[in-house]
Amino acid sequence: MNWVKLFNVITLSFFLFIPLTAISSVDILTVPEGFVIEEYASGLGSPRFMALSPDNFLFVTLIGEGTVVGILDMHDIEPPVKNKIGIRKFIEGLKRPHGIAFHDGYLYIGETNQIVRYKYNGFHEELGEKEIIVPDLPTKGHFTRTVSFGPEGKMYVSIGSSCNICIEEDKRRATVMRFNPDGTDGEIFATGLRNSVGLTWHPITKELWATDNGRDWLGDNLPPDEINIIQNNKDYGWPYCYGDKIADPDFNDPKRCEATIAPVVELQAHSAPLGLTFYDGAMFPDEYKGDLFVAYHGSWNRSVPTGYKVVRIKMKDGRPIGTEDFASGWMTATKKLGRPVDVLVGNSGELFVSDDLGGVIYKITTKQ
Image 1 (tube, helix red, strand yellow):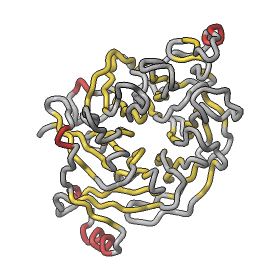
Image 2 (cartoon, helix red, strand yellow):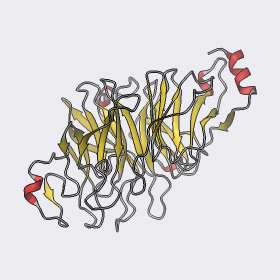
Image 3 (tube, rainbow, N blue to C red):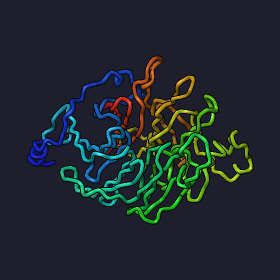
Image 4 (cartoon, one colour):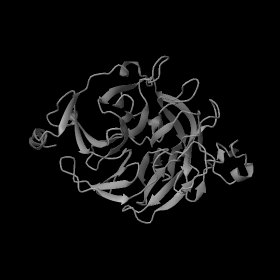
């Protein structure tokens, strides 16, 4: 990176520099032996989903602030500046921005009511004008809109339900939809997905994998939260069914469940799984290659709280074989210190974790 150019950019004052000092929670977070978790950037408000730009910068949506920021790691410049992170605010005035993706020269953002995009000209340049490519999405209820691009170049958007358990009038609710990159030719791709906040693509099979948050008020342990492999024109059950084709008691229609698709993984009820990603980096030990990491945002209505951690789902031949805690400690006996939202593999193979309660992005690396 050109230091003179960077210095000129900095003097334009669109960076806020944040010292890398530990916050109270990082000292009690636990990761497996041989790994290190540290605060990467703090004071962000409510960071949600993350994406790497074509020029390899980390971008994140700040849902409560209505902004999108990019992060400059000052360790990576020449000469390096230790213990500094530069935050550049790229977009302001958005309505609950959550999903974020780069595709074919554009930065895409999922606002709660629409999908927008901006021409991306590089980290040190201004974005293009805002384009509303999918307007008038349904609002209220589950309000996050996740955006992801498939291997064939189509845009996928998850739209959660408006309720805990109901029959939706708007057929776009509780679905994953599919569009052209410019927002045209929208169609419902899969149904019966109460709130599939996280979307990711298997690096080998090219399947779309998604988290799904189950309904409330069936007790502490029902229904299971889910990870599904999303297929075109398939029904994943909600509101009539949950888990492995189990009829919901509010409808009690077992026959309707026969044609639904069971989850590939059932998770502890009320864990609130959000972001997920397959590990395709080179930093972690070989046994982690291809495993799935999932961020548990954590329960809000369980008598004994659960979640508030990142789990590793071990994979073999493209299918799950077991689940174990990977990063935990955000929930103590008396306090919730953080709520993991998204996980993202960085350029060097590190794993980034966003936390919208603590306003932090964490970085997990291996010991050198």
